[in-house]
Amino acid sequence: MPICKLCKKEKSLIKKSHIIPDFLYKDLYDENHRIRKFDAIEKSKGVEKVSKPPTGEYEGNILCKECDNEKIGQFESYLAQILTNPNIPEEQKPNCEKITNETGVEFTHVTNIDYKSTKLALLSILLRASISKRSMFNEVELGPLEEKIRKLIDSESPSNDNNISIAIMSWHNDDKIAKDIIAQPRRHRKNGKTHYSFVIGGYIVIFYISDNSIPKEIEQFRLQSDNTLSIFHLPKGTGMEFLVNYSGARK
Image 1 (spheres, rainbow, N blue to C red):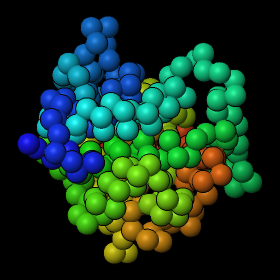
Image 2 (cartoon, helix red, strand yellow):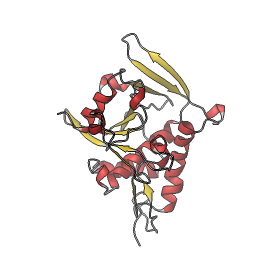
Image 3 (cartoon, one colour):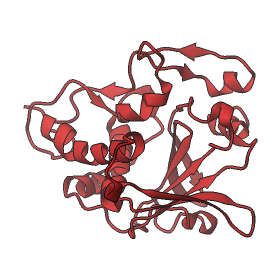
Image 4 (cartoon, helix red, strand yellow):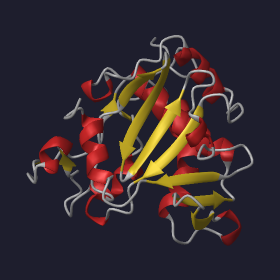
């Protein structure tokens, strides 16, 4: 019998595990529930080169039903609730305040979020991307860290906010490209430290996996164990430049 990649037990594995949760694609679907998938390089040139796969990226035979639907599912359900449900109970609703600091940096300060559920939901995406054999995720190779993250998710223990720090940025100041882009996750190396970035629906989620690798100027924007998060907004007019650089069109 095969072994589940999360619980490491011999179990029947399901045939379809989404690598990135389907609800995060919601703004990319057309009226026929097919994803509008853009090429960032072509779009930067004004060419709307669109493919329309019927669903997001998924992989078969990596997780058992319990791990996919229940363990990971509980964290994804929380994330879906706060991101997509307008009728969320008031006591569970995140509080968002848009701030411009003294240096002109714009960010949204979010309070009343569940640090544990949010971090484990995001870590589960990183883990599944590393496990996946699909070409979309071929830059995500966690190596020995894969086992560490697996244990965090399996034990439902997110560790502290300095241990695999997660920061989120957005280009929501650029309305034309705010929500219609999803891109291949990228691996980055800086000063001998590795981090990964995922572009989903106008947000850039960055995983700083090496110890002490998060830059000082980004540190305040990480997901924090006091149930807060500050989302940094790229300056207006820089979103497309970021996408082109991110895609590798410019070296």
